[in-house]
Length: 130
Image (cartoon, rainbow, N blue to C red):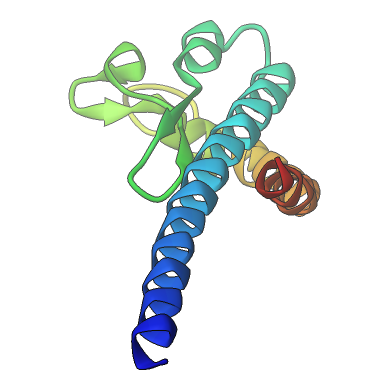
């Protein structure tokens, strides 16, 4: 009877590993969907005159899920990414007038994160059924 119990345990462990891999894959896919949704929401609230900033908003997959990235080469001049000024503000200087902080990215992220977590949980649960 020991062989039967060990064989059952081995099968159980294989099934557990399979389910873990399936869960991780489903979670990463759902995280990328939510990151895309958040990026779209951010693009919708960034002022039109900030075209380069809007175009720089993108969702990227990561090892554990996904993230939203803003800024980069198209919004950087002389080593400074002006998306930072859009988000956090900038005091007046010799190079130009200041800019008030908009917190548009942080605010939109927080709004979409709350809803997105619930959608992800429901979606992953659904994916695991199939």
